[in-house]
Length: 463
Image 1: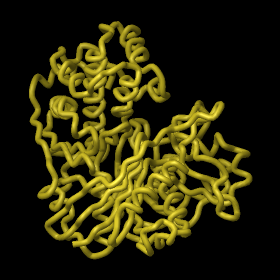
Image 2 (image 1 turned 45 degrees about the vertical axis):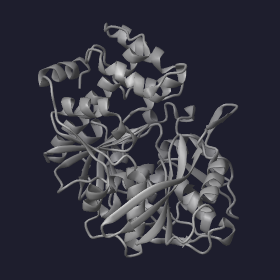
Image 3 (image 1 turned 90 degrees about the vertical axis):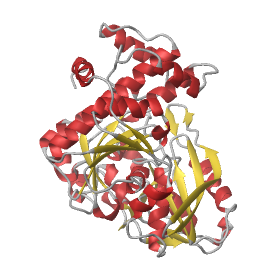
């Protein structure tokens, strides 16, 4: 048995975890949790990267006798370093408004044919185009988990699963340098690539943990989460459900068809050379942001009340960009329902039911489209991440998709992170997914209700 430390940075909090791994055992516990609070400075929304780093250090100092540390986080955001390796400024948040309208000015067909990545306002590529002259002083760009790894070890590198989300990595491998030149993005900003399982340096002594190796993991949290999907065989779809929902298939090679581009699918690198063929769905962000506008609302009670309401009374297109910025989410949802002639949700329970029904419809659409585009049918949908705790959403997903849903593990990103580390030090079994199935709590949901009702609701949204 070995102990490894997954560091998992999410949009609202970061965690330092401790995993005990052996051939038939996988235990995970939280050592330290800390808030991730974006900060708006005048016109720009930033990540408080120094507070995140301090939270990681506090967590590392609370563990001992570990074989490895690995870091994963959300995708697309980055820090710029000067020639001496100093950070030039706090990383900008992907929800910042500076990228508004940028994607519409780009040659998205050409970009997709090279990278297989959907061009969205949040994409690193769009952020860099928007940054323009601000890049002149930069010597290197490091994505968030790679920046943290560099600060911990003094060694720089860019992990490939997160690099693939930038829109600047060729689908065939390697940085798309010609594309960067076409867009006037300095090519010197992008350094060497490394893969999950590669060494990423050794912790500096000032971390307090001693000379512990840092292992490259699937540093995009979704790549780590998909690695921990407890599937049998390859006939499965996955939903990594959290603030964002990533819905798709695990494939051996990218699909670069124009039909996939038009449908909003993207080809992100997975662990062990796989491709995560998926579509971004806005996810539980709509509910999370709605709850910020309500006072003293308990999520468990809210879900119970929502479950008692009629299904599919009002539904919205959750991927509409109107829902991307922070702010008054219930009002935006009500406005769309009013505009489309549907009953307007007023109470928190009504808004919640609208959001969850709408999410289930978006999942249905993505799962069906992925199967058609990849010419691969699936027998089950695996829901991993925080959304796996939401029993109402999981049941609605089974009903909408007409497929059984297996929910769990909820800590998929941290578990996938830990499994890559354990494998690197020789402690993980050959079938890592079997280990997840036998050691983690999973819930099963079977489809119920009338499929025609879900089809009618999907038709209302034009899906």
